[in-house]
Structures are given as C-alpha cells and as structure tokens.
Image (cartoon, rainbow, N blue to C red):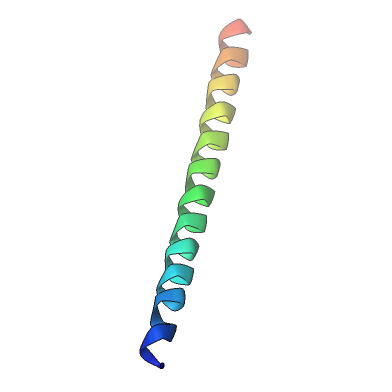
Length: 45
C-alpha cells in the first residue's frame, strides 16, 4: 500500500515545475512586451 502513495508526490512535483515554468514564461513575455513598447515609444520621440 505504501508503494501506491508515491505517484501523487511525483505528480505534485511535476505540477510545481509546471507552475515555475508558467511563471518564467509569463515573466519573460511581460518583460518582452515592456521592452518592445519602450522601444516603440523611444523610436517615436
């Protein structure tokens, strides 16, 4: 029975990695949009 309890822990760890990946992607995308918009504004000055 103790062996059956291991997969959920593995799944939870995978979910944590996915959350970190989503956070990195979201942060990178936000930073990219910020940089691009800053460049557009700077180019129009």
